[in-house]
Length: 129
Length: 435
Image 1 (cartoon, rainbow over the protein chains, first blue to last red):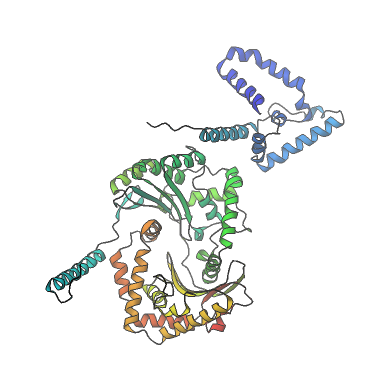
Image 2 (image 1 turned 135 degrees about the vertical axis):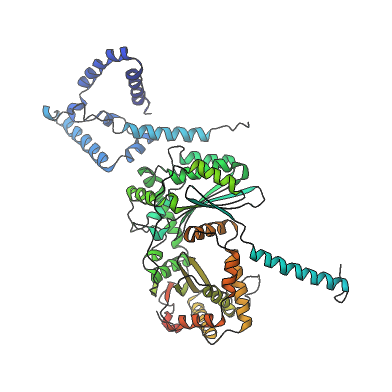
């Protein structure tokens, strides 16, 4: 469900740490992608775009610290308003690269790991040594 | 085979059996509860190497509700037992325990949090490691508090509220001690506990100086080795302390649909006189189809006396149950029984009371629940209770001291709690006591 985003996340991690040559090639592409996608111009973070209509992300969102949760809602509402008015934020309020923090991804990974573990224990076969 | 009582053979057998019993009972009395003790890495450990396939291992931690820095935090920490640690998730611990066969329990008392594991003897290393992990480095994640622990706290409080005896014991503790031992055992709906509260309470309480380990079914050397392997790096900390318990007294009346109950009593420093007076008053049946022959047996099981021991203080209570009318008469009968004791105790009654008190005090130290009690005593006094000492203390109680304790209850202020239909339940001053 959350697969596609997390797959990209892991792929990017893999490339940056294991394939420096490839990383050199795709890093400029990343900048271009973000620029054309334009979410930062609406004040959103990348993690705000993750589809939340599934149990894993719902649980992850519930685990956010209250301040993060509130800020996320604020950003999304502001982006909705901008979308409605066919506008972008003033240039100086665009989100900078440093502000684009992956604040939700760690929680999603944690919840996914828990669900995976539960699935493993629910389907395990006991082997006698 | 029937043997005529007059036959020499029977007399010999009888007298020798009497002799053996006497000498054996003295031997048991002189010998102790069978615990071997040691101190490893600053942790007191005690174990009873009984034969059998099952081992019981208890971590007794001085972190009960009387030490709570924030109301209800001790309850939250108790419910955090067996949740995630960096080494294994709570789910993994539960499932692995199921696979090995065993049970994990955590109990909160006013004095301590007790983590107990019962398992097959061979699995001792696994369960020791698991318990030390749960003790030394619980994750205490914020989401665990919200998702798992907080609902359990609510459940515990709700279940407890449905039990009149529990509601009454909370109320009488509150009336008797106010602070410390008077604090509620469980987190209340009014308490707001944050994860930071739980973490700082854990840091202060879950330290080596607040921990004793008691076990049965394993020997002291195995246990010492395990302690030095798995608990060497646990924080040493300082032992938790509380103010000495003061007895206040007063009456609390709690409306409840859980049942009707009236309880009154006094608290003071632990004294064997309390145990003997409770045993003389009696009331609780020790045999089927009979209410016994104690003073409160006249109430047909509607009233009974009981001593609740805490570290530094004991609470002697007389409790009446039933319908409001039954409680009225049972309460009056209990006060009459106290008046009887206050006029003097006959040697036979005293003897019976002492025997009963000895049995109650020692049987409370047996079994899995007794193991935790032994741990609590080891934690507060620094040594395992000595059966011989308990026996000699109880045997040294005199008729006069029992009489003057009864006089004290009748003349001085008591703590009391009425639970149920409070409009119909008697006030303790109507029964002739002061509150």
